[in-house]
Amino acid sequence: MKGKTPRRYSSEFKIKLVKEYLGTNKSYTELGVEYDVDASLIMSWVKRYERYKENAFQPPKRKPSFIADESKIPAFLKEELGLDKIKEHSDDPEEINAELERLKLELAERDLRIRILKEKLKKTNMEENQGKKLTDITILCIANKYINWGFRVSFVLEVLEIPRSSYYRSKNPGFFLKGRRGRKERGYAFNVFGGITKDEEIEKLLLWFNAIESPLQEEYYLKYMGSKKIARYIRNVYGIIVNHKKLHRLRKKLGLVGKYKRRERHPYTRSRSITVTKANQLWEADITFVKTREDGNAAILNIIDVYDRSIVGTYVGKSCKKEHFIQLMKIAITKRAKPQIIRTDNGSQFKALDTGIYMNEENIIHEFGIVRNPDSQAFIESSFSSLKREFVRNNEFKNLEDLCEKLKVYLSFYNNLRPHGSLKYQTPRYYTEFSSQNEPVYVNP
Image 1 (cartoon, rainbow, N blue to C red):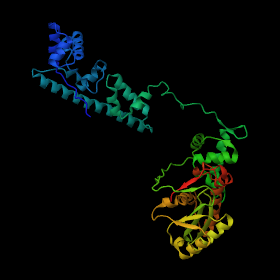
Image 2 (image 1 turned 90 degrees about the vertical axis):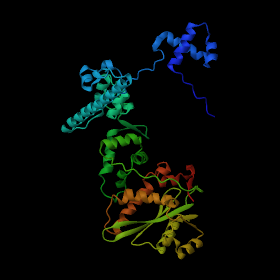
Image 3 (image 1 turned 60 degrees about the horizontal axis):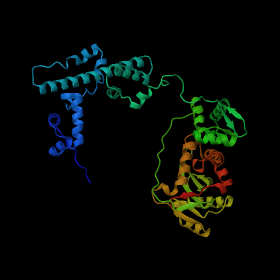
Image 4 (image 1 turned 45 degrees about the vertical axis):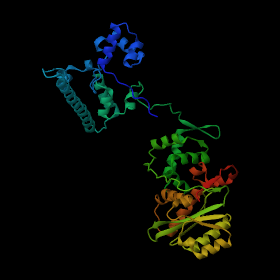
C-alpha cells in the first residue's frame, strides 16, 4: 500500500497565509479548514516568518560543491581560479546572470582539479627521481592543505582518490608516529614444559628447516608448508606453543615467506550422504602422472583412507594397468584391513572386468564417480594437489628409481609429520591413534 504523496506549498502561498493570520483575528484552525492545510504547519510558518521576515521561505542558496568556507580561500587562489569575478553581474536578466555564475563555478572547479592533480604529479616525480615511492602521508599533506584553504573535504578526497576512512584515521595523533602499532612483542613463546622459548631460538629452527637441501630427509618439505601447519608441527615435535600469526611474522622477517598464490575453491555441487566414522570404511583411488628426465611420464597410483587421510598404498610405474591396481589393493589390505567401499573414477583400470571380479570376491563395494566431476573423489584429488604443490614442484626426477626413492620419503612425511587442516591440524598417524575422540567425516555420494 502506497502512502500519501506529501503536498508542496509555494513560498508565495506560505506568506499569504502568514500575513492573513497576522492581519486578521482568524485562528490556525480556521485558516487550516479554509485552505485545507494542517494547523500545526501554519503555526510553524508563522514562527519562521517572525524570525526571518521576508527571507523565511526563500530557497537556501546552495554553496558551490567544492567550496566549504569561501572566507578561508587565499586571495591569490581566488584570483587564479576566477572566484573573485563570479559575483560580477551585468545588466542582463537575473536568469542569465545566474547561469553565468553557475558556468564560472564549473570552470573554477575544473581548474582546481587540474591544480591539485598537477601538484600530486609533481610530488610523484620528485619521489621517483630520489628512488622513492609516493607515500600516503605525502598525499594526505596535499589534501590537508586544500581542505584548510576552505575547500570541501569530500571534493578534495575524491580528486586525490583518498578513502574517507584513511583521511579521518590520519587525524588520530598516533597515525604519524613511527613504529608498529599495537602491543609490544614480548620476544618469547611458552612451551608445554612450563618454560619459555625465545624468538631467537624459533628463528634458528626456521632457518634450519630452510637450510635442509636433501629431498631424502622428511624435514625437507617443512619449508613448503604454510605458517599454520609449521606452527602445529613445532608444537607437536618441539613442544613450543607459538601462534601461527607470530610464526608468520618471524618467517617474513627472515625472508622465508614465498609469494602467495590464490587457490580456487571448488563449491560443493552435490549432497553429502555418506558418513565415515571409522578407518577402512571408505577408500579412494586415483592416478596422476609425473615427468622424469630419462623414463618420460611416470604413473603414480595412490589409495587414500578418507577417515584419516592416510595414504594406504602407492604404485609407481611407466604405466598403470588393471593388474597393478588389483595387486596394490591386495598389498594395502594385507598391511591395513579390507575396506567396505572403494571409490574411483571411470578409468579403464578401474572398470576392467578383472577388477570387478576381484571386488566381488572380496565383498568390497566399488563405486564410480560421475564423469568430469572431481567432487566425487574429493579426498584423493586433494591429496594429489598437495603432492604436486609440495613434492613435484620442488624436485627433479632422473628416472623411475629416483622418483620412487624421493616419493617414499615424501609419503612418510605426509602420513607421519605433516599436519592436515581437515584433521584439525593433526597428522594422519596421530588422528588414527586417537580415533575415539574424532568427529565423523561427511562425504559426497
